[in-house]
Image 1 (cartoon, rainbow, N blue to C red):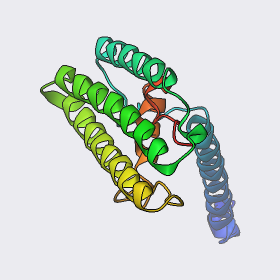
Image 2 (cartoon, rainbow, N blue to C red):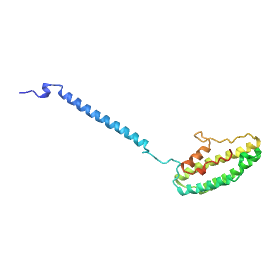
Image 3 (cartoon, rainbow, N blue to C red):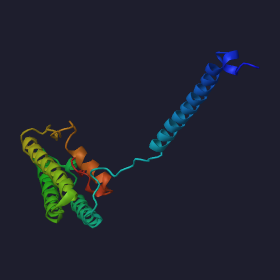
Image 4 (cartoon, helix red, strand yellow):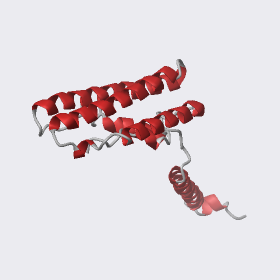
Length: 186
């Protein structure tokens, strides 16, 4: 009578268990590696892509806003270039005229803005930035009339960016480049 394999070789079962464990671990490692590669491929391919929080859902409002900004830029373009003014006072006058055009445009954009929902919150922040920008321009012309070397200074937002930057960012995100702050001051 022959002895059973486990009695003949007490380590035979351990060897079989070890091979099974190694195979399971290797298979698990392959699955983990493939999972990580797949995850990063998905990330880099734009898998979790979401719209920017400042992206407007109301495309009709965006179109109307773009038209308003186009008209604003055209009106500012009809003014004499502020940089070509002979005196600081004359330069301040041109900037004040342009600022009035911008203010009327911002008023119209605000009056037309969505009154509820996420788009309301988005535009409220943008309008507030424009109001700060307008105040910075007004401050500049006051200082310019006192000091011909005065420079336009922008307040900073909570992120530490000059206030014209979030205005431009919002316009860029919503594909309305005409609503960037005008470069009329030079």
